[in-house]
Picture 1 (cartoon, rainbow, N blue to C red):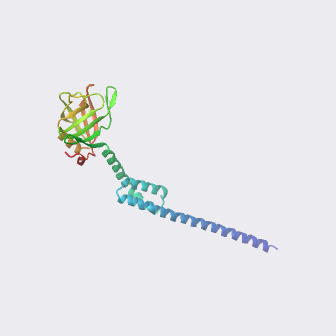
Picture 2: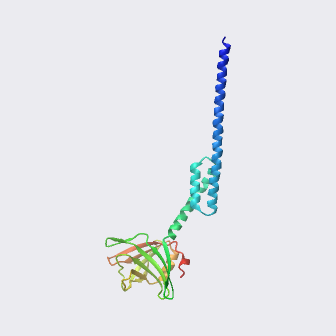
Picture 3: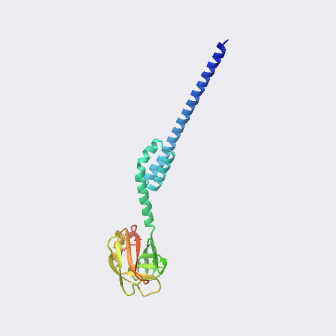
Amino acid sequence: MLVRPLSIALLAAVVLAAAGCNREQKLAEQEAARAVAAEDAAKQAERAFDAALAEGNYQLARAQGDVLLAQYPATEAAARVEPQLADVAAKAEAMREERRLAGLWLYQGQAAGKGEQRTALIQAKDPIEIGGTRTPVKLVFRDHPSWGRSSYLVMEAGDFDCHGSCKVGVSVDGAAPKRMAAYRPDTDEAIAMFINDDRALWKLAQDAKTLEIEFPVNAGGTRKALFEVAALDPARMPW
């Protein structure tokens, strides 16, 4: 009388155990499939990372690497890419800074007389304060077919206190300033002050990361304008 119930109970236990094993096996198989899919996706991301690296596009490579590590951190591809990311990030930042500095310069050419006037212009990092007004300062190198070569500062407001002649201080990369002769032309066409030795200033700009020019203003005292000149391209303005 007890054999049948015991057999049924035993059979039920076996079935439940088998079901549990099957469920665990199925979960393991699903986990393995997800791991394989993650590795495949990570390998694709790694190929995109390597391609960007081969092209020298460090900003794109950095982005590809960051996505790979964020989405597939436990993959073999992530383990291969992660040690490279610090160097790639540094190169990406250097590339970004190089582009920023290059974008500070404006090169122009226009017909003038029987030839072409060419200019290279850069604006100071920060505006200066004159009489309660903040005004930008520009440094211009110009090559004119009739007037020749010149270098000068331009402001939009205020004025330079340099009629006749004066001295300005030119500092390269934070070093002690070099005194250079300058003058404010007698004209109302622009608020400009010319620096006499344009060749010397041009050479300083080619070799420097920054030029800081201190000049007198009619509001009293002097002001300083800092120019980030590191990306000057002499080929765009041959002197």
